[in-house]
Amino acid sequence: MSPLRSLARSRVSLPMYNLPEMRTLNAAFWGALRVELTRRGLDDTPEVLDFERRPVPSEIEPDTMFTQVCGYPLQTIYLGQATILGAPVYSAEYCSGPAHAGIFIVHRDSAYRQLADLRGCTFAYNSRYSNSGMNLPRRSLADLAESKPFFREITETHSQPGNIERVSLGKVDASCVDCVTYAFFCRHRPELGSLTRVLAMTPPSPSIPFVISSSAPEDLKECTREALFAVARSEQWASERAGLMLRDIVPIEPASYQIQLTYEQEARGLGYPELA
Image (tube, rainbow, N blue to C red; front, side, top):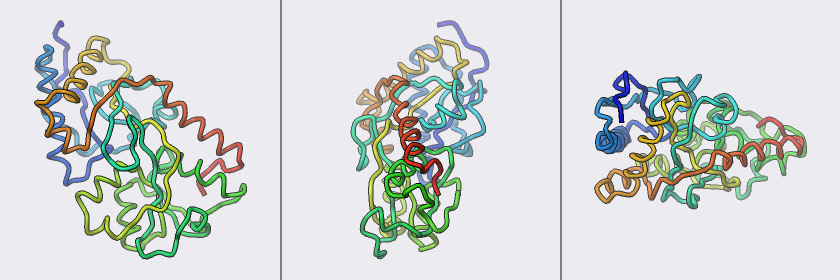
């Protein structure tokens, strides 16, 4: 493979599951990927991840070499900006193969026993562009909302971990978060996670994919994909995978993520176009 210019200045990040307590784990995963990239002829890749990158940035920049992006904005605000490299298979509860779900969480001592009980409560969600935080709960609630606002108050916070903390401290009644986010939060912040419980699960959808900028050279895309699958399956990187609850990373067709738009359309058809 011929040398590729400016790789060392490319953008690399893992912003979706990025608690401060996980920085060492994410850095180790990127370190493993760098080794596999070097074995394939790329030895000038960025040394460190951008730990400050937001989960929902303004765009997927053309110099993005590696990141993880929610599948719903990939089809909306980021349409055409990224190429999917693979889908993770997590060991977290509520995951099945390369699929995950949103989970509605409440305080462990609350009286809520089923999803319908949340009518009229206060609710926090991370982003209007989030699949697990907005799109999947919107579809779940559309069957109950009767074309009316469901919550008494709803707040966009830009942080799923922050919403788990808000629920645990009683600052809001409920939230819906990615089940993998919840698993990491409970692992690394058990004192807060134990104050919450899962009330209900949303419909499933494909897991949050690893991506590269769509404008990257095709040989770089293929090299990065090969390196990623090597990290996913080589015994050498077993501990790096375990730290991130990764069982595997598998190829996935972009069309698989269309189910997220189907959920959006179904919610609109039921008279619940916005989470409210």
